[in-house]
Image (cartoon, rainbow, N blue to C red; front, side, top):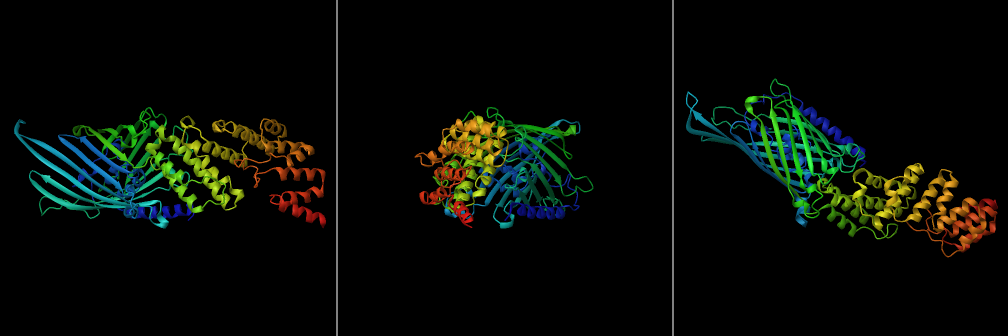
Length: 602
C-alpha cells in the first residue's frame, strides 16, 4: 500500500476516536482512585504529565497501554520510581515491559508483535493522631492505595493499520484505610500511532487512552458508591526521528501535549505541556536530558533532568546495561500541599545493539551490488535487518555507535541500486538510492565516522546522484563528505562531468586532466574532437571503467566502442560504424548504430 494512502486511513481512525471521546462525563477531581492520576514516572512528572504519546519506557503502562508497542524495537524496559509527596505520603512504583521479539526462538517469533507490561504502584500515608490541643498522642493511623497492572499491546500486525499499536490492560486496585480493605478491577484501553515512513509526518506521534472504563467501585462500605470515574486523554508529541532534515539544535527536542477528553464535572478539561532536550545528541560527553512542563490542573510548573548513561561517550561497550537516572520536582500552586520530589532508575535493555544489527545485515549484504545473480528477496532481507540499526535512538545517539547508523544508511542506498539494476530500471538507478544517502547528513556528524572502502563507494554513488539531480557543481563539491571519498580520480572525473552537463567545457577539461582514468581521457578527446586520440583509445588495452562510475551510465563499463563511435561520427565514416558491430558484438551502442545505419540506407 502507498505510504500516503496508509496515512489517510490513520487520520480517519484517529478522527473517529476523537469523536467518540469528546463527550461529557462525571466529576473526576477529588473522586476515588485519584492516586492513579499521580505520576509514577519522574520523566512524565517533569514534562507536566504530558505523556500519552511518548512510548519510550515501561512507565507508559500507566498512561497509555497502546504505547507499549514501540518498545518492541527498543527492548526490555524496567523502571523503579520513588516520590516524596505532600504530608507524610510516599509514592512508589515498579514497572516492567517485555517485548516478545527479544526471544530468539520459533515459538516467540509468532508473538513478535506482542509486548507485555506489568506494574505495581503504591501510595502510603500516615496520620499522627493529636488531642484537642494539637499534641501528638503517640498513635499513628495508616492508609494505602495501590494497583497492580497487567497490560498488552499489539504492534504492526494488521495490513491497513501497520503504523498503529493497540493496547489493553487491567488494574487490580486496592484501598486500605485503618484496617479496612477493598479491591476492584479496572479496565483500560489505548492506541498509539506513528508513521515512520512518510517524511515530516514521522516527526509526530499520536496517543489516545481511556482508563477505568468499567468504573470499578473501591468503597469500603458496601452501601456507598465510590466508583473510580472513567478518564480519557488524547496526546500528540513532536518526536523527531533519529535522522531528520531539522537543524542540529532542533533534533534533540521533544515536545508533548496532552488534553483531557472527558470533563471533570463542570470544570474545564486539563491541558498538559512538556518539553525535553537531549544534550547528548549534541555532545556525547554531556549525557543529560533537561525537562520542563506545566499543566492547568495540578501544578504551576515542573522541571527535571536525566543522566542518560547509555548515551555517554565515556563507555564504549556494554552501554545497553547502564541505567538512566531521572529526577523531577513539582511546584504546586496550593502552599498547604507542599512540593513533590521524585526520583527514578530505569533500564532499557536490548539483546542487539546497533552494531549487532549492522553486522547481521552485512552477513547477507551482496558482495557485488551490480550482479544479476542477486536475489530481490535477499536484498529485502538485508535491507530489513539494516533498518533495525535505528530501532534504539538512545544507543544510536552514543557516538560509539553513530558510525553504524551512518554506514547502515549508505548500505540501504546501495541496496536500492542493486534492486534497480536487477530490475533493469536504469533511470531510477541513482534516484531511489539518493533518498537514503542524503539522510547521512540529517542525523550523524561526520566527526564520528571512520571511512572504509564500502562507505567510500557509497559516497561516490551519492555524489553521482546529486549531479544527476542537477545541483550546481560548486554546491555539490563543497560538501564535507566529498573529501571523505578515497577515489580522488573518480571524484575529479565526476567534477568535470558535472561542469560538462552545465556546458562549462573549460572547467570540465581542467578537472578531467587531473583524473587519470580511461573515461576522463575519452571525454577529453570527445569534447576536443581529437580523432587520433579517440582511435587510440578505441584500440587501447586500458579502456575499462570502474563499476562505481554510474554517471554517465555505460552498461558494459568499457569506453573502447564509445571512442570508436565518436571517431566514426566525427569522420562521418559508415565503414567504422559497421566495424563497431563486428569488433564489439556485445557493444551497448549496438541498437543505436543499427538504427542509424538503417536510416542512412533509406
